[in-house]
Image (cartoon, rainbow, N blue to C red; front, side, top):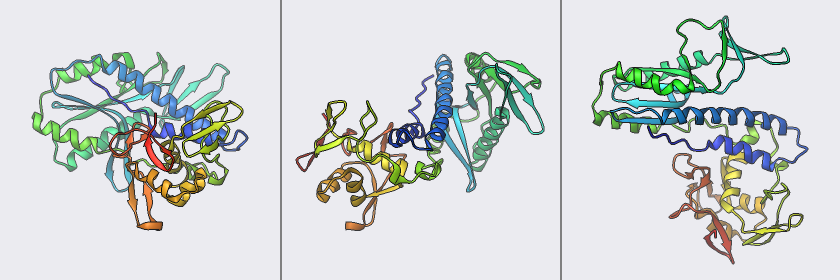
Length: 345
């Protein structure tokens, strides 16, 4: 099976937040903790993806990743991996948790016994999976689509379990190909290929409902405390703007072409959901408002308002190429060269 999983934009935003937070900032630890949890989850998903690719089915199949199924106006359910076939849907929830795990009830939860004797309590992944399956079944019923839906929690480590109920919907990640093949073989086709394509298209649109941006609000950070402009990737210090096509880091003795797309995306993910010409100039230290306008117009951004009231906003479905802003016509980054805009070399 083919699996395509983009680098999570939320993970990228957390990394950029750390780039722009000063070393001594009191919120750095909270961002680092969230980054560690998010990165571990992503690594678990990649491990499960590796096993999914070993699975071979003789029917049309689509592996959809990072879905956010909206059941109603108040409930949106995130799903790591959904495998769609003409015979059914299977959900895989990846978990990258090491050690001995203990299942508890009232309330349902997991506990991990650490080597130092401490116990870490976690949410129950089986309950999470049940919620996901129920959401997908409801989503299908609302659209009169007759497909069964089931799933498993796939653990990427070889865990030792205590108190696990018989028939619990879990399996080691390496058993994913056998699980999918077995379930598929025991099922019969419920929809034809034309309906399959329609369902795949509809599910593909169920993304980017989870919106924690800007991260300054999420982590209660004053945007004025962020490092502005371009940040040296080597030392983390603010780079000096020498011209509209050159920024440099004096301590590192490095000079590069400025990546305007990266900075605009940083603003939209960290500071505010919109950016204006004036805000871009203040954030970067650009004086020429016409040059700033040309930079903003070069990217695939939605606009509201006219003239000095115009603001630009990000459409997560259409304006991103991975974790970079799309440039109109090419998808490349943009730099300003003598008051003109050109592609980054």
